[in-house]
Image 1 (cartoon, rainbow over the protein chains, first blue to last red):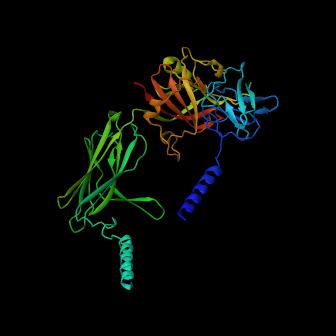
Image 2: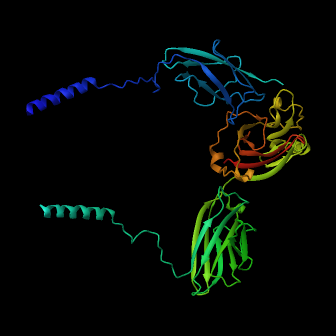
Image 3: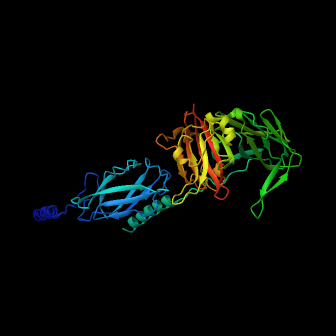
Length: 135
Length: 329
């Protein structure tokens, strides 16, 4: 009888070990979840001045085909101290990361930002062109 | 068998009782009244202590009627307050409409050196007197302590020590009127606004120019611009010699309580000026709105200031500004 119990116990343990599911949530180097999404675009774009108020004169024009963001800022905007804000499609991330103020004063050489899709397979590089309002 | 159950039951019951027993001896709510003269103090002002402002306290004292009455109350500051320091000779209560109603209980306070005294003239056993310490220039950057004391007719004396309180290094000036082209030249060093004629004589002290412009297609409006930046001084003919630069960092919704006197409990203190880093800031700030402000650092690095726009008027091309200034060592 005791032998039987031991045998059954061993079988149950083995089967549990075999059927235990491994919860596989792959993450990337930033600790962000890699998903199956392939969408890769910028949905909204904002520029804030050093006083955290918007410096845009109107909504930024985002062309997801041409991969451009065109934005006009107020006359007198301090272009060296600007906080850009990107809104991206679900699960996507941005490269390079925005960690604080960004210098947009070199108007001739627009900044480039790459959007990486949720599955980390699709990459699209947007060019952000800033123009200053003229009197 | 029966006996075993009984003993088990008794054991369980005793455990439950011991777990739920409450100790009513020490609930911390009942305080035996002290039969003697007592006092207490609260500080009523918040924020940094600036020279020229008051530190306000409420000093409460009471004695049981059977023991006597209050004779005098006094406050001694470690650094004598400025002339308008006083201990109120009224005891206040709040009426049904929320207003403080004062009842005179003593003579007008007398300042003797650093000591301020009120002598009671009414038979009073309990009073709360307000103490207004006007911070003197001598206390700048130092710490001040206060010793409150009360005397009763039975000879008892009680004292209560408050502080130390640090007195801020910074200066403040309120409600300077600036007007485009006439009263437009701001000096951080003097904490004053000058006309073009005056500015010409103090050219080395002019840090900012105030101007208002209404230019089609752009938003210029009210601006603070360093004289060095001609691009943002359209149509301004600077007085001879006015050419200094400055670092200006525009800020929104930093409504310092001392400067704005609005409902926001936000204070700029010495520490904010010490830690301020605006080295990458430009030398202009345009489109300044009411309740906005700007951090400024002078070209010689001697002063840092925060200029707050109390109000603006597009019609008269003018504004009312207030300023806190910190002198860097």
